[in-house]
Image 1 (tube, rainbow, N blue to C red):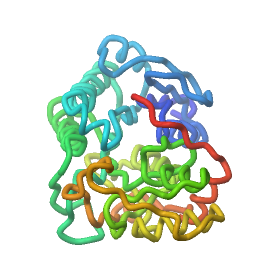
Image 2: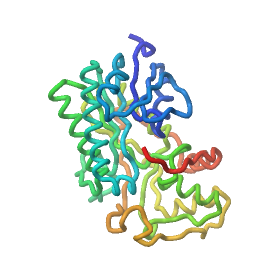
Image 3: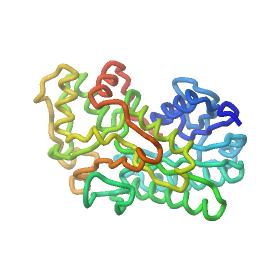
Length: 315
């Protein structure tokens, strides 16, 4: 069976990573069907508007698909912490609904989008897939629960799966509440870049096209079945202070134009802020032949050039 006869069903397909994944699968020769609360800005394959919270409409949209990429979720630190029950409901019950529909539709494999948030505060860095998970937020707990449901449905229904843990994905089209677009939007507007805490926190940033490539590779590889992969860029680790200065430089602004937020002003309490989170992608490199290709400076330039930074919106 050729790729063109195989259909990939992408939940959250109108979203930031969803659109990049849809493009990656379409380019690789798959038929793409996206499913989301809203319509995508760019039409890629077939789209169905709906919610993962309604099992019947989810199944009706999914049937006929060979594979599922499950990206739909409630996102954002502030949103998920202020609506904890909704976060758990959407991200756990919604995932169960996706799994039930996949079993009923005879789907061959599902790729689940998890998050590096599941690691919590690391004992060591960079983080590998075998490191202990210790989630510090409701969102992280919901993602870890989703991972366990993947394993449970493999045991009970023999549904193949792969799990990808994303590390700080960024790129054009990401809403402004996330750190990279938030920094760039402020810089372009001539406003001080807002930094939560002292700015010494370290993150490794992964361009969205590289993340989408990781999803594609994890679906295609039989060696990836039942496995977890860190999907990030191990060459793009940087402190928030240095990131702010880099953004200001590329935006042609004053390097000192930053403001440090007090705890009551920030999305996340300083005590719950993770100091260092960087990705060890050795496993993805070895098993998936995954190799991030977009340098951090290039990614920042692409966002600045695109000016595509939507305002935050309810999901």
